[in-house]
Image (cartoon, rainbow, N blue to C red; front, side, top):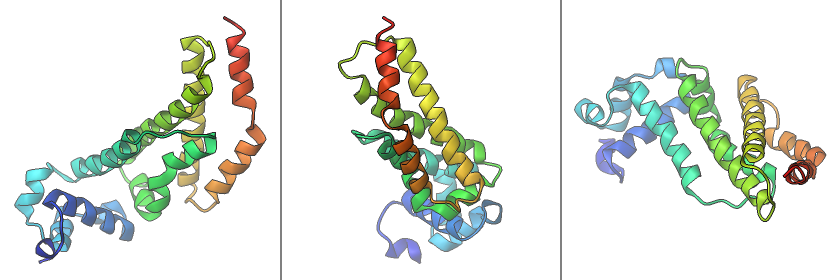
Length: 191
């Protein structure tokens, strides 16, 4: 069967098959039976690794989140940080839409917020370098920009990913250029 042909662990094959199926149809139309039939992994193997479909979903989303977070990124612009946060979404548009439109949206939102916070924090930490600014102001700026990036991206997903999100973020960042640095300069003057 498929399992014997493919390389990788059964767990990897289950996740790969799940993503493939999620690209093809809504989550409500995917069952454990579909995954095991498509992958060639037997049902007991599926349940050895996952208690149910929601635990598989959480594992897939968490793994993608950790891939982004574990990589050390240096962002020279806020748009490059945001685009890194959107990487998985852009590569798996249909799967993300199907997950977003499911009862498991909260799992997606939780980890997408975590990714957004990570990349925005890394970007702002580079801006804070060598500047004295209170921890409260640092946290406030990071939180605000995280929510801004998260909100823009989730709104784009909610509207069906029909607009050019990259172009929008690039244009927004052109208009916004220099403002984060100015806000940090003002915050450093308040110490």
